[in-house]
Length: 287
Image (tube, rainbow, N blue to C red; front, side, top):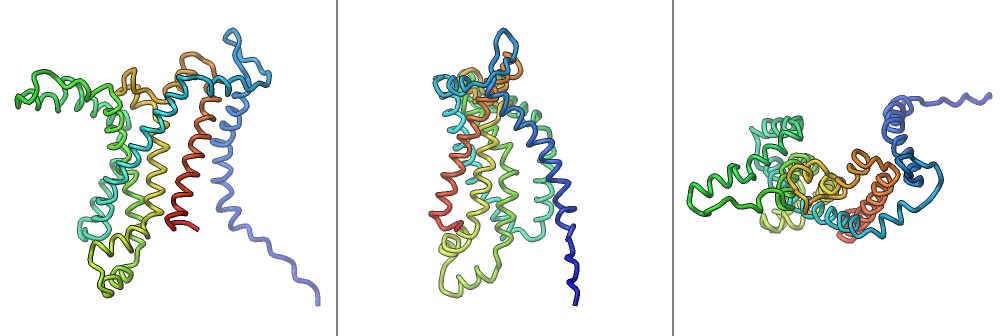
């Protein structure tokens, strides 16, 4: 009997191939280009294509860049933590409490993601400004004699704005993972004598931890790398590393140094991802 010809399955290639090629061309290629740029340097407003690690040395030894990185990590961690804490009850209510209005709330949340990012930032600038909504109410009630200045152009304003922007983004993965928890597991917990609080801490929360970790990391990366909100609401004392990168590319035109700062921050992000992964493994979320 002759050997049957091996059938080549093109289904996965056809399905995954175009998106993968699209990602490599439009995402991977620019990353590679700027990675190469990070090993060049600028002399007299001209990029010198000679290999050097001086840019990375400058980033590591610069107190300014180290301070901006530390501030970015701090803002990212605070924003991510608070956003997840605020998102979880909403996602829990949508998954286990809302019945009739669940689809409506979900649709409104998705529609909020289509609103312009700058519009939401300027809205918070109107709310937190010296002549904004909050100060106007405080002055009208006689609670303060002059506008509260720490509401605007501070790290507080940056964090509050970032939380409001990323809140819907964090709710969706949490809602998805909570919806995948089978009701029989919760019912079995109650049948074994566990109350609502014990069922939540021993069943619901552990099973939803992958969504918690994903939401936390997503919010952390977006917040720590943001530059628009600090530029508009942060003032001089609340700028993040993204603002320094934007200045190197847009104002100073030092693309090699800007690339080196970017990839230095990528290493920091990778370290945070690793720590969160170890934490998740310690909690038994992943194996």
